[in-house]
Amino acid sequence: MDGSKRKESVAWLVFCFGLSMLLMGCGSKGDLKKQEGQALSLPFAGKTLTVCGDSISTFTGYIPENYSKFYPEMGEITDVEDTWWMQVLERTGMELCRNASYSGSTVSGPSLEEVDGRYACSNRRISDLASEEGEAPDIILVMMGANDLLTDVPLGNYDGESAVEEGDIATFSEAYALMLDKMTERYPEADIYCCTIAEVGRWDEEGNGYAYKNAHGAQAKDYNAWIKAVAEAKGVPVIDVYGCGITSENMMDYTSEGTHPNVAGAKLIADKVCEEFS
Image (tube, rainbow, N blue to C red; front, side, top):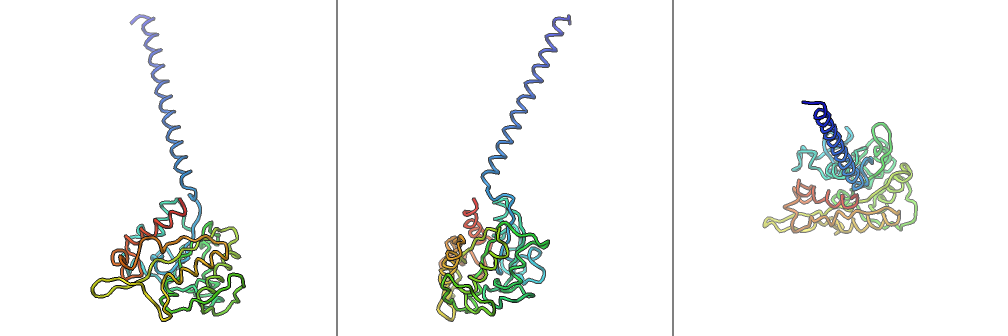
């Protein structure tokens, strides 16, 4: 090969190499823009989330050790990835700060309790909303009230303004108000969201579903009305999980026994919650 042809060959190789590097660079920028677009589509990505819940939100190994649990030992959810709250974390990009969920817990009860986290209005539960290291969450998601319904706790008649006096809080609306006041005081920088509870029901031998009524004749929708009223009075947004698609007619398909969601039911709840964070 003579000198001129060798030069032309080298020049061609240099050109091809430069072009390939340019194309690779364009691809990287394209990928970066795509990643940036994905991040922008997840406005809550990276924020820390605490769940304040009952058995519906429990899972062994993800709640405080002295808290009572339900899943996976009971019910039909055996993989933590199928819980409604883990689906929310994965789909929104949020990180778990604490899952302060206690099976059988109520909102109402002794608000000055320091040891047992069973009661959502108690000092212990409010304290447990922080991480184990004591870090405050960015988001607090409350999904409570089903056990107040199931254990016949009276609805009460909170006036929307008064401060509820600490003590043994025996009515739901007053306990819910006190809980929110204590959350706001303890975690002033956190954004709180209140979820209504999904339909609670049962079915007869023929498979006909019906909404559960407690000793006071109250149903899930009645407790939800107070959740909405108290949250509005406190300036806290509400996620209407009651409208997630679980009804008295189809609860055999979405729950184990009319209260605890199965995998399909947990997805419906997650879908409804994610609407708020999308």
